[in-house]
Amino acid sequence: MKRAPEGHLQRLVLDWLAAKHIFALRMNSGTLRDRTGRPVTFGIPGQADILAFPHCWHIKYGYANDHVMPVWIELKAPRGKQSDLQKSFQAKVEAEGHRYLLIKSLDELEAQL
Image (tube, rainbow, N blue to C red):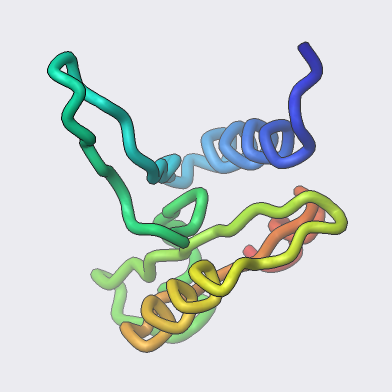
């Protein structure tokens, strides 16, 4: 089965972050049913695909040495667009002082980190 463009990009990004020794988590959201049929919801609708903690950000952006800025990374296929829920999530995390990146290629990520 051929992997979707965003799925392929996600693997590239996670591998690149790991190679750079940047701690990152793949963030999942959705709903599944447990054995009894009850829905189990996880994540936040609209949340970014990856949460990363690059140590270089505290130097580049002048934060204290013990403060590593969280970076939320939303991945999109070349023609992909953010949903309204994703835009709302972006506004929330940026209001908390976190960075949010909308990435369509590994080159874009490398340029922004």
